[in-house]
Image (cartoon, rainbow, N blue to C red):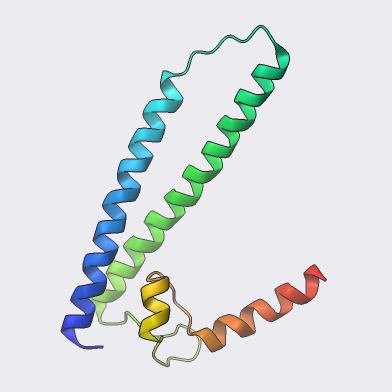
Length: 120
């Protein structure tokens, strides 16, 4: 991958990293600011369900931050855009859609085939 393309993806990843860090900070503030005493058990259950959903979303974002940092490290090491399984180049369109990916589309399909079979 040429330097200009690496620079493009580095910019994309850094922008997403900043966005996720802001979301995590906002979520932490909103979770600590809530001091709700609900008289109605249904309201309490709904609030708890919403809180659990928010925690799940934040956990996903935390994992994305880890993946973005790993992708940035791969850029620095010159390994960004190479499939971890077969070593082939990952397509630019795939990287644009999901820049933290480590597998080409062929290897990803192979990985997902057993997962799909188990679901049916």
